[in-house]
Length: 527
Image (cartoon, rainbow, N blue to C red; front, top):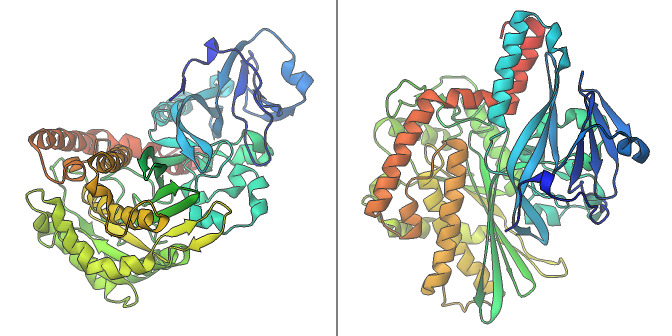
């Protein structure tokens, strides 16, 4: 996979012209003493940002090329802009990596980002204002290191294949930010000024999540499998600092995961979701290894649950809820409260599966009992299938929503198990497997599938908890190993440290939170 790491070493050559709906693939950044100039190398336009106050101005080709006393470099996208006390900061993508392809479009992983300062007014601030500005600048530096960001220049990555296939064909000619589902645009709050300035070709929507791709051969034909997760931005936050639901029903660590399979002109998609238990609850950091979860008493509790599942039904259809929490102890109290709320919604099937008890000793195969209990509902939901002409052959008519406490380790093991069952069905329907065959009968293909899900689990865990996922052995080997136990122990210690001593700062760095603080700061200087 190619990595564009050092922009200064590469010649600034124009690429193919922009297609309708695409954004600029590569930009020339010219840094003058009084302005930044961004010029598309794809035959597009240009704009300038004043370094004094961050004001934006579109440029003609002649204006963009004028001037020579500047530093010239290459960047790979503009991710947004944020205004603070002393001016503005422009977030740019400074290096990228080719992560693979999704529906014939290249998907890039963000390797590094940088905020360009337009804050010369800082010299006019009071000492208190300078201190506040310095604090927010330190948060921006942390935000530059955000992991798990992906984007494409010519395809909306926020919509799964089934949703995208049902939208009007003319949609693809709109700018990417207009096509996107705002739930999954990580930098949504940073795009407003670029949108107001009508700089559509320079706006790069980013998603946070995970993207893996692999290929193997069945019946002499190539099979491509993509595993693509999209993390929702409506209740962003780090592990202990963001739990449960808000009053609108949006939950922490809500992730849509799509398993996409391509074979002999057929494309199939299987969707699952995960998300924190949709109650009002918290887990306050108190230096203990496992702080006690606490349910927040509120008259809106049942309405919060209703709003959450109404949103799911509108987007995905019938919902099967799989709750993997313990039935005893503090988790049990939370699980029992969840079960009690779900009794008020008889149309939604709720299944409790005490993962730690039933799969104790690291026996991954015991998940078969869960599948046996839910197979009929999962088979009824099905998966999406279309041919090379775009004709829809099958629809997925519902969703499995899985959760544990963190929606990381137990959830990832369970989702991988259900995804393997679906993959067998998908490949059988496509003609790559007979009705009696399974990918588990091929060690090499089974290992590829397990590797996808282990890496997927690790990436999502790094984004929410700051450490690699636990229980990766269960996905990779179907059992716990000694090296895996040691790795899990190290990851658990890492989570403890991050939760107690680092995640509070990370939490503030999520842009929805940051913007709220900035608004308060501008209004009262007391935040």
